Length: 417
Image (spheres, rainbow, N blue to C red):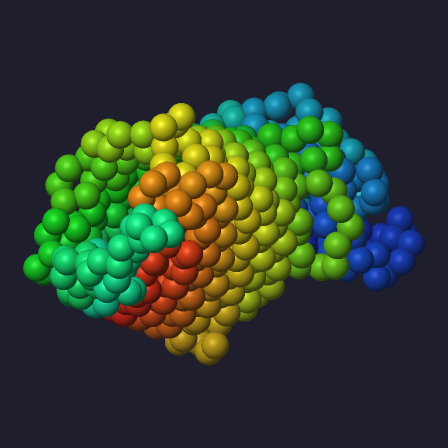
């Protein structure tokens, strides 16, 4: 794959220069115009990320729009060879030779490719990142904001004091996380594993560890790009299994004309969460989101808004829930040696019935906001220092469940890409 990327980087430019100087070049600005069209950028991005099948589709779309784009013909020929399609690659090589009179350097590479053969070998890329951090959390146990809570209704209402262990407790912690991604084939299918473990200095009952396994498979429906993502996850709390989760998501990117650097997607998801040690807490959640992405050389931004539907077990307290969510994430390069991250997320839930008739007669309404800011200082290509601040505001109409907290974390991160 690296060989393909380097060849395309050099050969496309050389052939484009040859085309620009030939009698067939109708407009000296044509190359720059066509190179900036969306299908061609999609193809180059797909090649750089190892999604060869998607690059093939994008280049074919490019040639439908710009049949005289010499670079796209050459890129498509090399991609076909990478996929092992010898006859199609040879047909395209002949078109390039007959139509564009390529210079000797290009002809030499084409002949060398013919001699080597199109083996269709899948080059596997492994990407691994590991983070080790120390932090301080003001509310490790998600303790209630108010020391008082009410039970009963009307004249039977009682105002009680919470025990100290149910109020916010602070502690320092050590965090270890790792992310591993592996390419599976030339189509762009990938497998990924995410692990995270957090150990508190004193409050070990709230130590957590999580493991997530997933597959991401890209495919196309006509001109629509899609990704099917499936995950399996598990979470432990205090050394005991606490939660299991299975999720299936579909991300669809319709061919909507947008300004440069923007992309719009729709995301639908189904998930099921099981609590092995709790009764009547299991739930299935449906999710539908709209997402707008922006990316240039120094900045990446993402805005999301969506609807949620949560279907609990028949005996779950509060019954089913419906809600909304939104979020904004921004990553920007402040200087050569400093990057920044900012994020905000909001989630709102409304229950459908009294939370616990006779004890807590209110219909639960939950409104959670998370604010996040971070600074990243690259020490070298594969190593960086990260400072993160996070603030959580979980506001509810039932004071027993309302909590606020914030944490500050300093981390060292290594990655091999």
